[in-house]
Length: 215
Image (cartoon, rainbow, N blue to C red; front, side, top):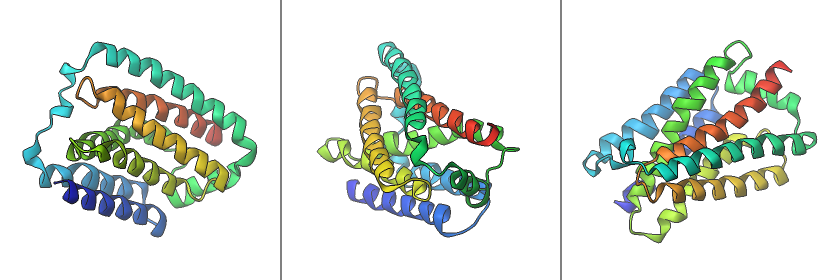
């Protein structure tokens, strides 16, 4: 099970990165590919495992409160970090890349933002904190590989945007963030706490995106 999950994860992540970086397709195509690889494929191949991590009603209330506080803090941290490192980022090139390679313009940004906030965050939590973490249940690697894959997946997407020092800082932050996401889910056994934090983090990024597009 662990080996199959590892192989599937590597294939899915690299295939999505190839679609993201290697070929020019519409944003809707990239989204559809992510839904298939991060949701439908794990469901079909590992359907016997069950989906206890989606039993949100069982989520510990203390974990939810902690997630809200942590998520809001991370959102502020992301916005603050952008303000600090803005001078090291070529925002014009970043915006151009979003409009050309990624296919996101100011006209459709509000709709893309809603998908990222609710849909994309759920897909990633389902795959990295639900399916993948569960696949390594009972192994120490569950604390290493899922957060690492989460970080590598995002860093590879950010490659055209940032300098090496900023990328390394982001890699460390994402790996630590992935670990925290996983840790906060432990008591409740569901992905709801990490999903809440993820949505707050995405909200911080979306505020930065709105700044780039409209200000």
